[in-house]
Length: 275
Image (tube, rainbow, N blue to C red; front, side):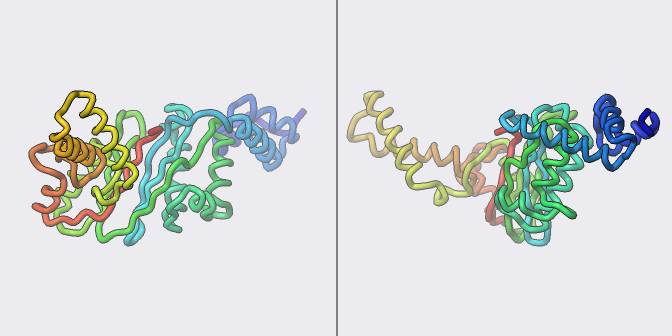
């Protein structure tokens, strides 16, 4: 008979979060040697990771960390909302966010290579995924530099961790308006800070499309330039933060709200789980 007790099974389950049957089998195989049982369970989990490689990860959470003049935003993804709200997954996200922020990584590759204790972030995620039993991946990372920051993390459900995260970098003293603008970004989902950042190819493509639409509507050729520019401006109001109508008062642009509050917006990042 294997040299272990029910208490040994319970202790190992609490340590690793593994199932009763798998834990008991590992201890039996290891003849009660706890360290060997841990190796068996991790190896089994690692094999499971390989099998889960092609699974989709549409759930997860957003986390942020501020380090001096930088803020790092991450999206850690998993397969189910059950795992997303699990304490072990949330603790993993905290460790990953800390490690990634410590090196100010601005890409997933750099973040995965960052040290996390005695291992890398990639190894930490793989080890924890083996225990959690789902595919877990660091999907996105962004680090912003700035004078001041407003971090807004939004829960789409009270039962889940934050599903939307925004970091707004700015200079100025009106923190209340900065927070309101971060909330605006969460809702309005701009792609760029201002229209100068929008790729010229995207603008040209939009101009081509709205020109064709205007012609198909029978608009007079002489009026096309003005009509097209109006529609291109509408495109800018969709994708450029400063051009957008302010969510709390659509008679004002975000640019005007920031100016009135004495704020200069210098950058932002917005992540939404699964988007």
